[in-house]
Every structure is written in C-alpha cells, then in structure tokens.
Length: 110
Image (cartoon, rainbow, N blue to C red; front, side, top):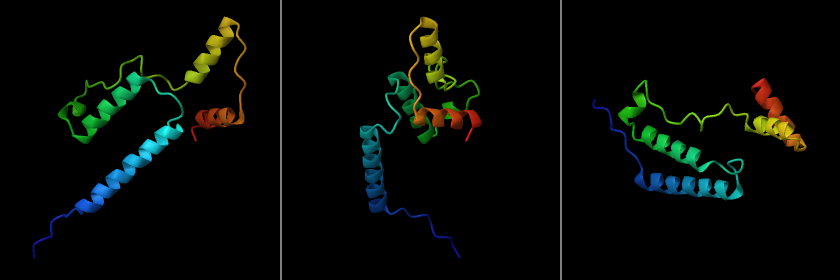
C-alpha cells in the first residue's frame, strides 16, 4: 500500500505565518527584545537566520563565521559598563530587583 504524501494546508500556513509576523511586530513595539539592539548585531543575526532557513551550504563549512569578534561579547555588557563607570569616577547605576535577579540567574546558569 503506497504511503500518502505529506500535504500542507496552504490556507492555514498563510494565516499562521501572518499571525507570527504580527506577534513579532507587537513584541518589538513593546520592547520585548530587552531594549535597543546594536544594528550590526541585528543585521548579522538576520543574515545568519536567512542562511539557516535556506540551508545554504556555507553554514556547514568549518571556517564559517557569522558574527565578527567585536559583535560577539561574553554577554556581560552591564558588568563591563559598571567597571568602566567605576574607573572613570562616576557613581554606579543603582541595582534594581530585576537587575539582581538577572545577575543571579546568569551566575547560577538558571
């Protein structure tokens, strides 16, 4: 007995895609990305995402790089800024509860 082929409901796929685009737009308008994002980092991210979605053969190369060294940081930008402020003699920003919780989660890795 032949196996039935995979069928995609095109109308549902269209509606779902539209729904996801609207959802992403609303998230960006509310600032769900955590604040301002570096435009170069965002551009590199979307370029990499496009390569992944199209399954471009360049992503499978061992020497492939998707972000430049200056864009990829250790993720401790806030700590680096605090250190710079302390070195320059400016008072450090106050640490709010959400900042403390974020710091604890990052330090304990979950």
